[in-house]
Length: 197
Image (cartoon, rainbow, N blue to C red; front, side, top):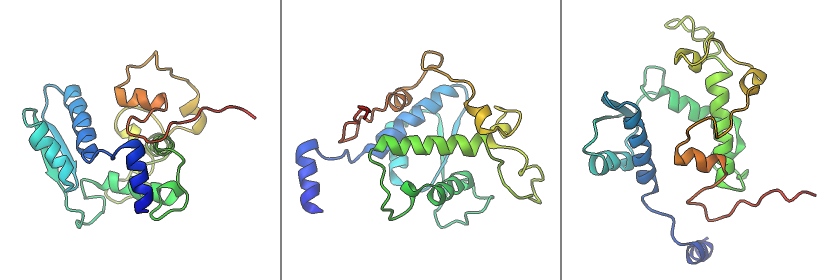
């Protein structure tokens, strides 16, 4: 592994050590821009790169950062419940995301595509919970997209994908444009286009 690592670093350079901090900074800037007149309240785990991005790189912006211990109970009362639940479900349902998997995606963009499809499924095509909840009697009837006021019902696969939206119809951030065009600026491998049989 050491030989392979040194070979990759010689050929492609070292992976940027501040990649999480840099991408977090860009994401937080976009969120602040969307909510110009409001305080941005961010909940996260205690990862030091988020804290550094906010305290050092974005200290002039109106951000309140609340950290939640990873040892805190991961039930629905935890502010990070939705993220923790999503993480657990994608690890269960997609082999590429399982811990210690042998089912690797061939490229980082493949991972992003799988993640995006699962994100669409979880937010639009399934209810918040499958079973009735005592504290939230309609949780098994509404999707997260309904709760956010984006949709009026839980969508089927066909309903979600019936309308094709092109990049000319939507303003995309640089990250989303790279994703749609299957580009990863940090990748060491070029995605090969389909050449046919």
